[in-house]
Length: 411
Image (cartoon, rainbow, N blue to C red):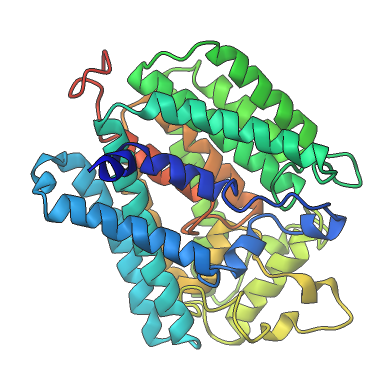
């Protein structure tokens, strides 16, 4: 019973530590090649790591058992169940794509794993919230982060050759975004649930200093923008993020569809140079051409069936181009388009908008700026085991759980 209670209270802590890489820390010396891609190296390994599979499957069945066989499902808030249901609908769309996937086994495995990931994150957060252990989880995570960074530095693997802090992550950009997510996640959870934590502002300062040491410009920008947004009016922030989301959806997903209806295939790559954002212009242009050339724009290649498969995509299999080293679209909207096509991608984006529509908290709404902006240059929508997708799911779950029920203070 003690082990069960500890898992209920601190399972969410294990989830966070696993996603930031604290359970499998990269304490070795970093080389510059590891920084060419951000989350892509994580996604390529999706489902291939034995420890990862055992970890998530165990937690998944543990929480499902606790909910289903102890009648705790009667206590789950209706809003939480609705939001989890929307996430599972997105997972179901991924499962459907197995029918046109060139790698159905990959699609099936990754779709099921996304179900496991989504359910586990939501339920682990709910149980930790229910037991009032969020404060302890925040504190332990901070201590683990500091200790592992210090250990990595002492072992000589904490910095890259360019003197950027990589810590216990595989690269400085991964370290930067992980710390940025921790900072924003813990800040909005504390504001939402009003738990007390000594020297919390000092911790925020230390985390931001660590982000600066990573020299990750995107992470620094995201954190600064978050703290600017939370000082604005809620309605204004909601409108800004909604407009930004719709604009990005139009530019990366709908523009080619609308233009092709008029006999012309226009994409964002027609308006930018090939070296835009360190070569992303060329990568995007190649991917849009791939969708057009192989007539995959409507339904895509299937979930997880483009990059990270046994076969290198046709236009990336060039030994004389840097494209041979690319294993990510470096854009979340384009990544969805590659896997689901315009039809299912539009539906997924509508479902994400539905989840966003139900959020009524300024801090949580502002936090969603992180995954939105991050997906302009990296692909982290609907990616298991990444902190960006984790913070999105936690934000959705936290928006469903008020403070009143378990005595956390004012709503």
